[in-house]
Length: 252
Image 1: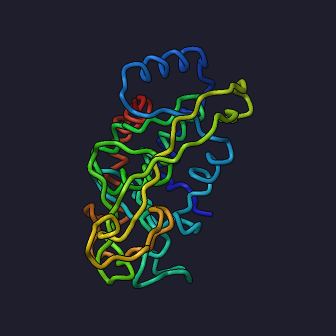
Image 2: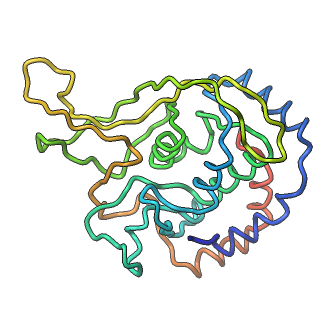
């Protein structure tokens, strides 16, 4: 299991104090009324899977690299050359910004709902792709995978967003929260299909895969400028008060 970066762990201290649930509920309700996005609660089991184990879509411990712009970046385990599951050719599409990711986790623990129009997603199309694929939502922010696999036609595939209707289900966000029956919105599944699948009179195939199960050619370069571990820690140490204030604010 991957562990928190020490700097991230330090700046998250103090954010796990008891929260006024009624205040959180009221603020979240106001946000939902004002926001055009999709909102839903996350199952407790999914919270563990998505956040506490820190695994990529491959179900392996995430790889981590550091940036001055966004902090630590968590991505596919296949990037880590020191691990036995390192793959020099292929990766999954997992890519999240660790500080924003754990800040989201903290707010879900407090009782906030998932929002498809999370403001952090505007800054990074790879982060947005991961978020939408994982939580089965869609928004109008830029969204791109790390690359495009090819279908059986040996041509780059096309990304589509398809609605999946689900039934009302029991909210089990956390044990200490009251169980309430809520109407879950229809999920939006991000799939990859043959680019010609819906075209008439052209060669096409039935290749299809969901975004969280797809494998991509490993890119040669990182999307964000990478710095070494010591440079990152020196930089965050000089800005720790600002970073702590950033984490203390809400994402919505």
